[in-house]
Length: 283
Image: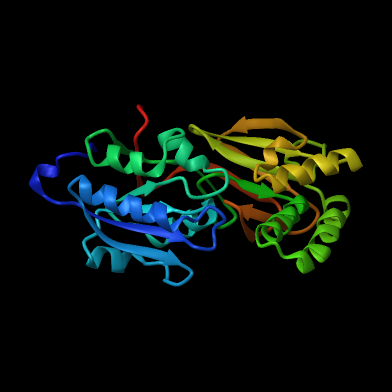
């Protein structure tokens, strides 16, 4: 579906942001609203977490919203998308997190106001996104399975400048990295501190993340704190439509950056989102 003149019908857009995000910018939210109004659409509501609750499908449908713009990190995007299951509108992902992987896949490195302007001026189309599905979860960006996921607590404490909590989370992450039950792909014997599974087209790609010594642990920790764990020691293990991760105990998961629990083994499959996402890049 193409966007643009809308046949004389004014489109209604809501914006969702999160003031607890390290990249939150109230002035940017205001500029997005101004851009919407300047391009012939109705900027009907701005929702700011955690002061406001996440809307659900019924609320958005009752308000006649056509486009929900989300200016948050991956975890909030995932939570919002799950609440919108079955909605017939379009989701516009804007760069509002640390890595902005979804926004980059849909819009490149463009800034939020320009993405909105292009959306409202016939320079966008909607598309389904590839997803990772398994163990009762669905990820738009990817799933991390394994004890190394404890480093996310360190990252969150760093963002909050919580020195007291860091005194506990850093030693805990180190201990879990080296002593937690490691994970492996089904049919392979090599163990890893974590396996990252991401959607690539119609397939899944499994990446092994390891920290076998102090030097690799330092690299891994720095990668987590910088917001991109993939910069740590890692290797591509497999590519295919189905990936099964094995462990000797229940597998800790990070689904789009949020902690979740999985059984063992966990089987993940490549899928497609049922919601439609606005894309301003060609193709």
